[in-house]
Length: 316
Image 1 (tube, rainbow, N blue to C red):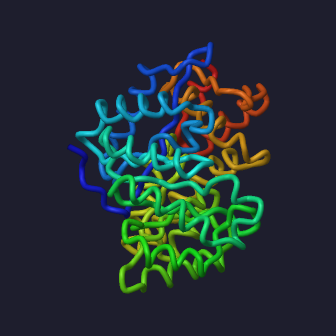
Image 2: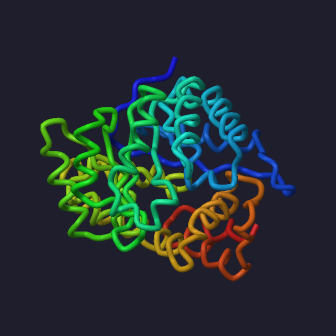
């Protein structure tokens, strides 16, 4: 039976390990999940998200990933399953599968066809969520994309969705704008039925959390969940001195993960886990490709600067 999901706190998004032939490396994916689940104080783990290269995984693979994730850590932490689909029928199929396989909640991505003007047709995103909520009764995290991009959901449309679909309990906020982010926090937390704001502004995490987020959902948690948890708790306890100390250690790592090109962020996190001895190899499915030796060196130096990797071990 799935554990109850509470939409707050620190929720890392799991990576997915691959063999050299790009097949799923279940054994090392399980080890990665178990490592994160052993971190005391996490609220949940997300699978089948961006960090797991869900865009390159078939339906059957996503089902398998959720199944072995539930088997490995589902008795310790709730699992949030990504719903990444261009078609609403497919999204509903994933949602039903997630409920059947033991997920505790869903993270719903905006469908790509809406990038061609979906903001002008709010009934389309409404229909997408209606088909998902008709297919299952799991709590939902709404994924808000950057306001400068074509998949951003207008504020008024978002509020209407939250009013119509009470299964939406939180937002993964990636609006990529401090003013809009603060508006989301203050408005959504004050609703008659509050919707929790979980930040994914991991490149400027401390600033985001200080605004009052209820938690964070981040691929960077695949590497630094323990440090994110320390930062979250320091801010929650109004200990800004401690928060600054932790943030100073996170700064070089966050800078390395989120530099351009942005699409390599989870690729970099995989390489970081290899450098830290948590994964044996860092394989990604095309169109993603192996990082250069220069960039891996940059990640190594960032981990040393952040105190996660000892310099004398970095060349082993």
